[in-house]
Length: 121
Length: 121
DNA sequence: ATATTGTGCATACACAACATACACAATTTA
DNA sequence: TAAATTGTGTATGTTGTGTATGCACAATAT
Image 1 (spheres, rainbow over the protein chains, first blue to last red):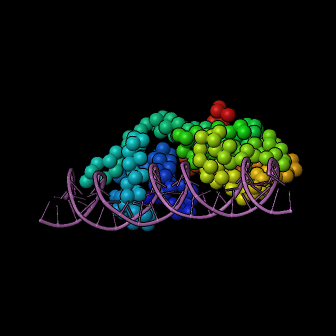
Image 2: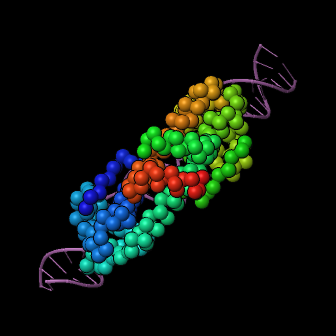
Image 3: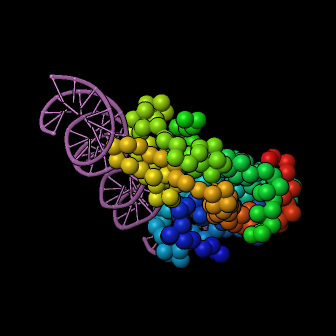
């Protein structure tokens, strides 16, 4: 499991987990049917509580990205490439809409935003 | 006072206040020396507690955007246009760095981000 | 049976938001 | 000019929500 969490981040730990696992699934890095590590093992590895991992996995389940089976494990759901691209853009767009409303409130134009973006991306 | 807050937003009320007032100051909409409404009046108008307003005003004070004088009021600090522009870009850039790390985690390239941005801005 | 997996529950802690009472400054007024 | 009044920000204590936790329970596999 290739995940790194930061305790000092302003984002909750479970949220960091959700975002990173979601991204890996939607980039195709975790193939369909792949079994995520058991929550105890993940918790041990990440030095967090079992509950925190479970909360993240629960959210991934709600999003339809994984299927959880009691006693067996949590498995990456089955998607076509097109579906993955669609869901990925959907998630990014949703976030981007919130981000841009912040930029707009400071009176930035589209060109100004793009200019700044090119500097730091 | 031209501020709108949303109780359903995921952002805390005091944070919404900070962002909106900051933006108005740095856009020059509130000129230097302008006296913000007394916290009681603001609280009444926004239907929130005095403390919530105070918390926001406190943060603006820490950022150096306003000067608070007990018994008198809170006044917009004095800036040159250049300074305002610098601070504004500084705040936006800080936010943007966090935003882009999210886009990057999904494997989006700069061009893809710009493309999506053009659609929704 | 036993080990491995996910699940449910009670709790500790941090923070947002609140109502209320307090302290300081300016103004009024006697 | 001193006391009272009004207007301002400040400090205290309480309540509710959400993050993160440990431990005991249920379901499954071998």
